Length: 186
Image (tube, rainbow, N blue to C red):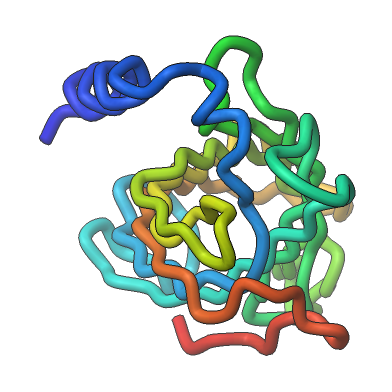
């Protein structure tokens, strides 16, 4: 389904509920995110159409309801990263965040573990809710990931890649995990 159509359908669905109802949907907990790579240019080990599985943990800093910001902890192949997401005004069930991470890059015979810096954008949209103990919580999500800038930090010339993916996710546990998520395959 084209991205514009998905966004239009989500917007219509969001408008079907009063804003006051949307403002109370809690985004918190660990979600099993299943993704499909949509762009993979010069990124080792990634292919367009490849399916990936990740664990994303949302940490809500406010005591109840929807927070203006969320922290997203994403399990990565090497460790994890934390991204601050900001709720979009007038769209109570959508967050956008920007972050960066370092990726390995080969220079001659040497692999620099922090050889390239990658900046990315993540957009998260609540797609299903459920009432638990009288409060609505997010139980399903849609998300997009796209890098928008890469910088070579080595002295060698390197062709830098670009990747993007779309995700759907389901809630595993509504409570945050103390130690953070563990890396999932993919």
